[in-house]
Length: 164
Image (cartoon, rainbow, N blue to C red; front, side):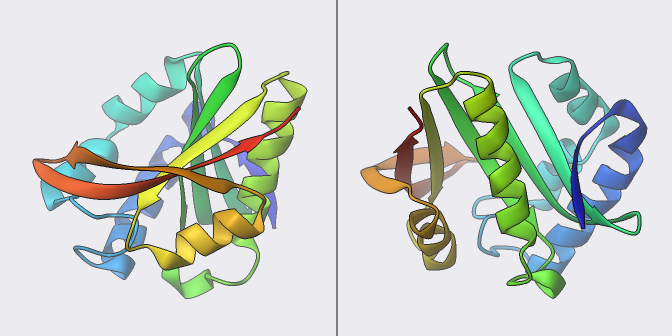
């Protein structure tokens, strides 16, 4: 398995991956709270993804094996010191096989090489699996907030890690 930065040539594979991950998780699946079919169609569109690729503060990664996309991660630089891990998505069929860890390590390596001081991630408060994953990676809970996601109020846990 390898982790690569998303390029315009990867957009079609990324679209297919996002739709497959959504179908595997099901509506209301962890990591997809508040998402609807309409939301998924929006974020799994070439226009949306190409827009993200053109944003110099956004980085996107694919975990792949033999050309098959197994996972995806995206970050957004918040300021000169902080990057937000927008999320890691791994196909349900390959969870607990190191895909999320490989993506997280790539995100961390890029953040450290970029001289960033802190990484922040928000995840649903009910997503114990993600919270446990991030805490095992050295992030600490720092806040609990509510955010509007697709018209639904979602209870989130904010975690962060100081990098330097």
